[in-house]
Image (cartoon, rainbow, N blue to C red; front, side):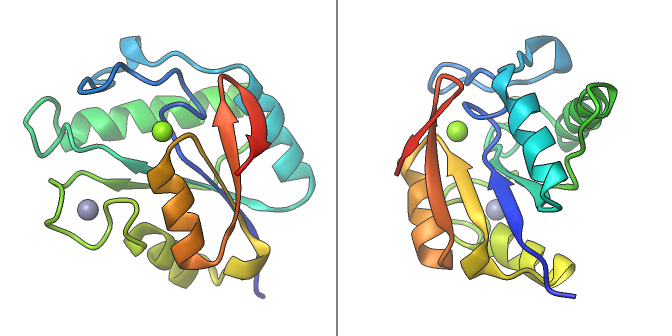
Length: 155
Ligand SMILES: [Mg+2]
Ligand SMILES: [Zn+2]
């Protein structure tokens, strides 16, 4: 079965974005944007897969470890579950700029998700707060909405 998905950027979409050059290094520093629960609940009701795609270059920079990032995501998924909604998958690029195929706006994470979940990309949506998310969506043929402080705006 071919399925449609909503790809969510993390920082600035699900949680308050850290200041430029800083990273969410531990769960205590992760602050949800309340709107994300409503959005995910809606996508679940429509039977759309919900897939997080996030650049976490702080790992490459030694500001946090992959285990720190995994822990944050495990707790994030638990909180969504406690709120009665479900995020289906999380893809992370932990790499330095220019060293991989997965750091957004490169399409590696979306293509891996497409393969894993058998996705119809043209029928899928990306929600992000940055130009790299917009560029990723354009590269992959995804529809795009921009998130701004918990609101959704056009492109
Ligand atoms: Mg972002
Ligand atoms: Zn990468």
